[in-house]
Length: 385
Image (tube, rainbow, N blue to C red):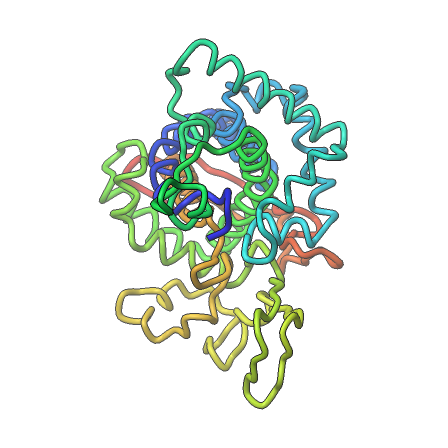
């Protein structure tokens, strides 16, 4: 385990607690979605979902309550967008932040040694918020930032020589580790989650039969209740659709790894230190592993079919013990958003929808070159289409 990396247990707790912020955030975004439905206009889905993920991140990781719909020019949002744009211009950094096996988290702390103005702004917010919370005691907020402040590293996360009698060592996360985690959460989570939701919406709009089946599951299971961390676990078809969407349009198009030791794979010798690049988009559409690979078919991930899939042919979050630590959080955020949207509206293609969607070139983030424009139409709680 990389020192300073949150444990799986911490991520599970954070996800459960943060689901409340996810619910509030998507409810806030739905005001604009319903207005668009009433006016009969199309929406650019990346903008909608980007507003959602930005509100989640600002609340959970920075302790801020920002109305991203009414105040898109808020200094935090503007600086966050600038930081993300700068961050995405460096593939090595984004891969290292999302998949810590590439580089220890400590290497990312170098972001703060020569911070860009936008990173410096975000860092100053975290510094002042942490200082205030420590001076006044518990903030009363159960968010990711507070969990990081309260967290301790232990066992394999800390050198055992730091502990008396070489027992299990424990220490608080340092301030710079906390700030690094919060900023990396924003940099790695904003673009990828918004991208995943945009392409899933595009696929559902292009396959109304699948959208209808998904709406029925949401109606039958939730019965009009607000989607939350617990009840979205009872929506298996939603999970199937999400996995199939990420198979066709993985948010990260390519992964990078390095051989930790000499190894021979299928007759190819890779000496220690060799860089390995995994083309995720190509792998997840390889007909050797996915029959009729370009077809949107959530049934690939049904209980009776999912065990037939090669375990390393679907890697939108990487795979193995060093997969993306934010995987669970991203999936919950996506499920809550889609379930909330489909409770209220149907997603439809329009004259502005590009079919087939063209992907932007020369980027490692799966991005629609001309955006994803869809029409939304109000639906009742129990009927659709």
